[in-house]
Image (cartoon, rainbow, N blue to C red):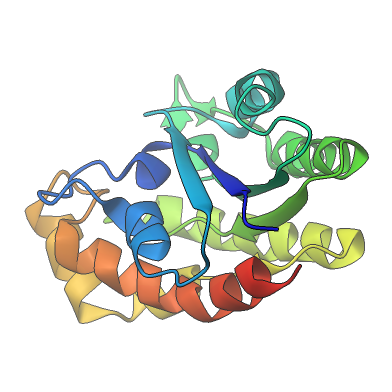
Length: 197
């Protein structure tokens, strides 16, 4: 099929916040794809948690992935869940896991293939510890659901370009170099997933 449509659904990292080239990792993946007939939609929203994404994703994807096309969804979220506000994390880890499981089940039920990209590290040691635990839990959810999971947290934690650009930015988001690194980490899984009919 030559009408392949992909929705990238998630938070500010999906939106590419901080990228002076306005591509982010999602734009770079789409731009580097050889598959004909690909349409990519970026549905990243700043500060959104998995709960907020769970509430909106289906309504936003449905008009973009109509019957007759090959619809796919890339999910990526989690960092905002682990942010502490008013003395507690914004979303309890168990609820984050439940949210991911729910969106994957819903995605499968309407016949769309899913790919999940894990949450990246930021310039906050305490939050990174929470995000690393969530990353492992997300990997388990995807394994159980039979959905490919791209764990980027560990690799980016040791990536000098990512770390420097996050530090020089707002403490969370890199510039174009960091997003390029994230896109390249994701590309092998993406290439396999997008080529599979």
